[in-house]
Structures are given as C-alpha cells and as structure tokens.
Length: 161
Picture 1 (spheres, rainbow, N blue to C red):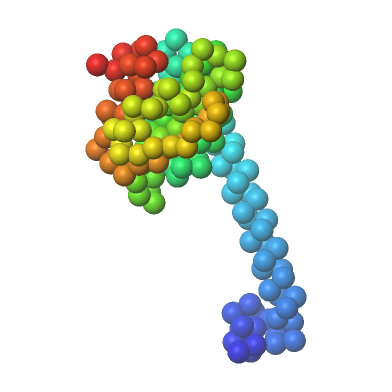
Picture 2 (cartoon, one colour):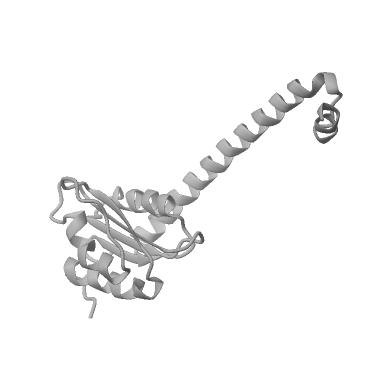
C-alpha cells in the first residue's frame, strides 16, 4: 500500500510522508489562491451590479452561484456607496433556490421585510432572530424566482408589477 501511494506521489516509500505533506501544502496554497481570485472577481462584479441600482436598490437574478457566494456578493454590493438595499436570487448549481437580502444597517429598509413574501414564492423561508442587515433564505421552487424578485421590487418601491 505504501509503495502504491509512493508511486502516486512520485516518491520512494521512505519519502511518502514528506511527499504527502508537500502535496497537502500545495493544495492549501492553491485553495488560498482560488479564494483570492474569487474575492477579486466578486469585488469587480459587485461594482458592476451596483451600477444597475435604482434609487439605491439592487434586485437581480444570478443563477449558478452557491448560497454563500450569493451572500458574499450581496454584502459586497450593499457596502458600495449609495446602496441602501440588495436582493439577489438564483438557482445554485447544487439545486434549489437561494434568496439573499442585504440592507444598509442604518437605512430605511429591513432585510426580512424585503424578502418575506418573496420567500413564499420560492416555497422557502428563513430564520427570524432580531433584525439582521443580511438574511439568506432557501427554497425549492425555481419557477418562482421572478415572482420573488418582483415581490421584493414592490416592497422596495421600484416596481414589480
């Protein structure tokens, strides 16, 4: 078994431990590099999306992002100047629906109020502890995403039909 592991690591059986430690170090470094690139990309994307704001409000559909990525992006957009509220929704590659609401802490909006009805449209929900400036909801009805975003637009006062 050690000989086979050594072959996979291109090392002798005596050096398997050192080779494995090197590989684990390389993996850790690569993960750090990927995270740094993701953060840089998210920052640029946040700026681009923030430019679409109507009256300081951004409500967008972004499919293909996982819940945590959507949350981080919403927070980055919210932290841009002149942004009062952000609602992002999308269908992550892992399935289901992610819905995120982020508001300026001292602003006029409440994160929960913006997506309360929206969460119902995606057959989902979220926890209710206090009045946090950022809420992540999950759901299962992908077909309800547009309805959810329109609901958030109505609550925010920027349309929504």
